[in-house]
Amino acid sequence: MAKGKGTVSPCEVKEALSQDREFLKPVVQKALQGILEEEMDELVGAGRYERTAQRVGYRSGSYTRQLVTRVGKIELRVPQDRAGQFSTELFERYQRSERALVAALAESYVQGVSTRKVKEIAEQLCGHELSASSVSRMVQRLDEELTAFAQRPLCADACPYLILDARYEKVREEGVIRSRAVLVAVGVGWDGRRQVLGVELANRESLTTWYEFLVGLKQRGLHGVEFVVSDNHEGLKNAVARLLPEAAWQRCYVHFLRNALDYLPRKADDDCLTELRWLYDRRNLQEALADLQRWLEKWQGRYGRLCDWVEENIQETFTFYRLPLQHHKHMKSTNMLERLNQELKRRTLVVRIFPNAASCLRLVRALACETHEDWLEGHRYLDMSLLRDQRREPHLAAFLPANPEGTPGTTEAGQRPAVPAVPTN
Image (cartoon, rainbow, N blue to C red):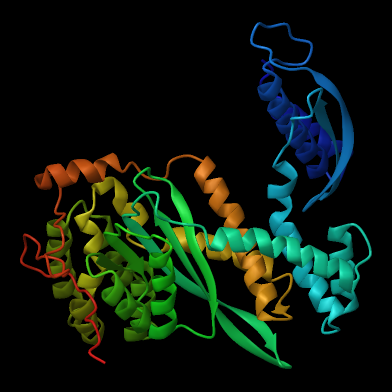
């Protein structure tokens, strides 16, 4: 069986650098061609010109196919087999987000709200001149795929970890440019792999929009959530408390440290926040609380307003100490989701202002779908057996399950992690 066809050696990279300014194009072309050849090897059960008892089919030449990528147009030889069974998801998967980007740019051009530069970029990515009919066909095919992704059932396995966040995009509506919230939910299942659970567009972040978003996830089968990470948005906290009362809530410590700047003078001592950040590197809650007390004693005299605020709110950021030590780094903040948002921002900046809400949702969903598939096929993100072991042996860490009413229990130090109260109205 042929192996390593998609591997590019350092010598080949150096040669491409010295001979061609567009050095990435031949590198990407070689890697993608290798993927196609390995897929054919798996189908027929043998490498090219290889004799083996495991062979179940035979090659039958190849045909040329162009693939438009971010490094330019690449020409590939797509292998064929005699039975006509060979198919690859390489083109469809790789170009899903590209087609969404092209569709957004094309819609801008067709609706006359963009510039000549946008038209040139869209045609360069698409590979041919754009028209209203071609854009319509492109959008229709893409929407069918993304709708299936957005509405897929989530009932297969429980999702103990849930991360929620939102970002904003500019959308043109009735001639007015408005900011629209993109709500994103990422989960980690008992298999330890990440997955994008949902992506929706809302007018703004509020209790209503987050409530409807979480209701949609639960209707699709989301269950077994034990730990939720988010920022301190009141609407989001209250929606989590209403719909996921059994889950412990973790306030993102990165957002918390940013909020702390509001309680410091402009020329404050940098050591103050640095030492506060160190509290999140402790092995357990008891160590963190002991260091917190020392931090308060040290800085109370100089920054009393900050210390009062920290003492009142920091318990919300210590909930992650309930989890296994190896999970602390990943679950004490929304950084995992922030990295996905950064990728969304990098791609949506090409469009800048979306011609309508549908084109905005289409692009962010396409990017989320691409990331979701990469996560499922990539390495396991967390070892969830550690959480199972901790459940069986609670003495391994300070993890305490929620009480029957859904409110997290008190810790050994007698401190009650903060959980948003359910609104009465």
